[in-house]
Amino acid sequence: MLDYPSLFALAAVVDEGSFERAARTLHVTPSAVSQRIRLLEERVGCALVIRGQPCVATEMGRRLCQHADRVRLLEYELRAHLPALASDDQLRVNVPVAVNADSLATWFVDAMSAFASQNSVLMQVVVDDEGHTGEWLRNGAVLAAVTAVERPAAGCSVQPLGAMRYVAAASPAFIERYFFKGINAESLLAAPSLRFNAKDELQQRWAKRLFDRHLELPRHTVPTPHGFVAAALAGLGWSLHPLALIKKHLDDGSLVELVPDTPLDVSLYWQQARTASTLLEGLTKAVVKVARAELRPAGNV
Image 1: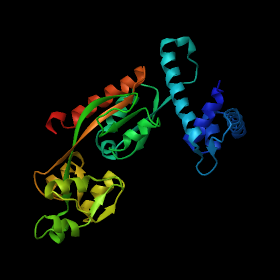
Image 2: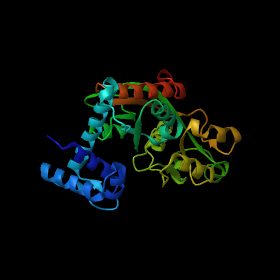
Image 3: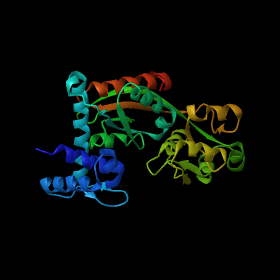
Image 4: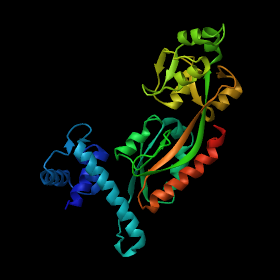
């Protein structure tokens, strides 16, 4: 049997990044935190924390932290049905989710806010490409994810959310400089594009659909959606942007669509661990409600 005060001490160190901050969170001394983790490491027979700035979990430590999150979730559910278990301290549950950056920048925060306003939770968001957020769910690091993958991960359920529409755009000055002879494969190979990170293939997908060939585009890396917009406005490059994020710039002419009426729609899905949790069900309802109000209907993709 695991010692749960020690388990929660481990989770606090990993969440906070240091023994000192974990101690403040748990209202104990740093030496007490250190002793609890030492006892837990002796119990499981391996190191659980890599001491550093910040402290990070080992693979076994990460798995135990995930277990701690699930224990808190179960206790939260139990307190709702057994008020006598409630104590003076308010139990806040970590809810780890994985989200693509464009959803986070456009609609997902509204869903989180609606959910958190009704529940005693602390949202723990990791950001990754929509084609890769499902990996966080498969390895147990999160309980739910916004993903472009329709097939559910093992032990998970899936719901369609709708489609995010992207348009290829650049500043008028950039278009005049690089596309004065028109948009074609050759001009795209000469014009710098923008990408979020090495996993971002939206620009290549759009170009291949237009010209039926893979183009190895020159690209700047700008790892934030709002940075994408700022870089495009400044004339650094062209890229695919969520329409919701740049509509005002298209309307005022500070950004121009490269090829009119050539959007790229990306279908999004909500996957969550298939666990008997009313809390996760509440999160799912909030996410689906906001997504279906903000995204394009799936049938229009």
